Length: 168
Image (cartoon, rainbow, N blue to C red; front, top):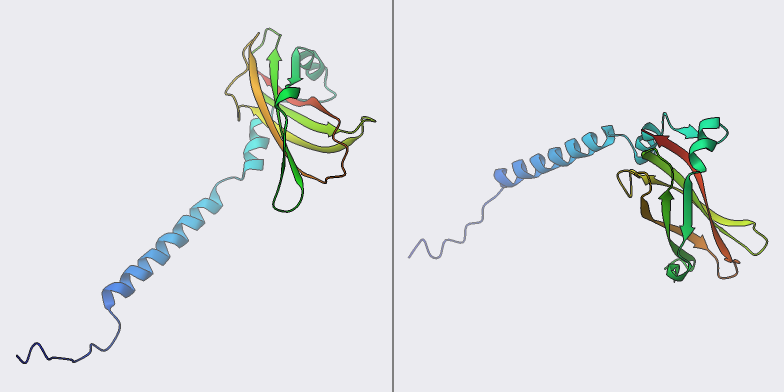
């Protein structure tokens, strides 16, 4: 009977709980440290396009003339955001009509007004981010999401431009 009425309280901190809390804190700190060592997305993108042809080089002009980018005008979505701005999702297709396999392709999608002036633009790495390679005579889909439009912006058309290309 004495054991049932024992109302004595334990004093102090549970040592197992304290050890588990310290171990979890240490584990989170190690995970954050390891993640900080990995290169950022921009650094990875720069590494992928390090030996690519940029605008102005003769090779760039030679290879980009074989790239055809078309916008699917029936598949452009405009959505309001929580910040009161408008986001556009633009679907298109990229065709390689050349004879070389493309393993690095960066394009710029720009929304322009009726006068052809750029309202907003965004660069995106299509190959190898959205597709692994772009083979000769292959067509691949491309999707660009551009945010930050106001309701008053004139969003008349979409233009695409190749900004960097890397061939095998």
